[in-house]
Image (cartoon, rainbow, N blue to C red; front, top):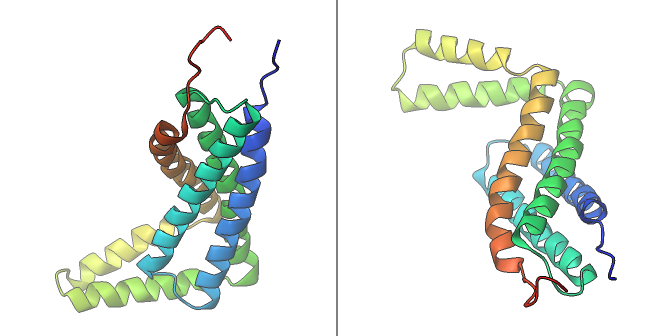
Length: 173
């Protein structure tokens, strides 16, 4: 009887590599002072899609060329969770230890953007900034990063697994 490969091992391997890639993207974003640049969001999504495809194809190749939709979804979700933990830990470490002023810079940029739009009063802007500062504790940032990455990874895995899956012609093989 054929032994099935471990989807967890494949997901851990590719999740760790994706986590390192996300850490690299974040580091470049911080060092170039481009924290609000939407190009980096696109780059992050692109990296996630690429590594989810690679992870699912790796699992499929280890499984004699077959992968059910649910197996692909589990590989992608677990890989996203691992990547989320690693990249969120890096972001939290960077914001607390390496450059604690980065959040203040982001707040100043957000305030300037709100003032330029001119749709909010100064009082409303102050209130919005106060609320956003309350949500920037290291613990909340870490948890939000993990769950955000997991959520986006799950959604992307739903799509990618539909294209990468390859069902067996005889399910009793």
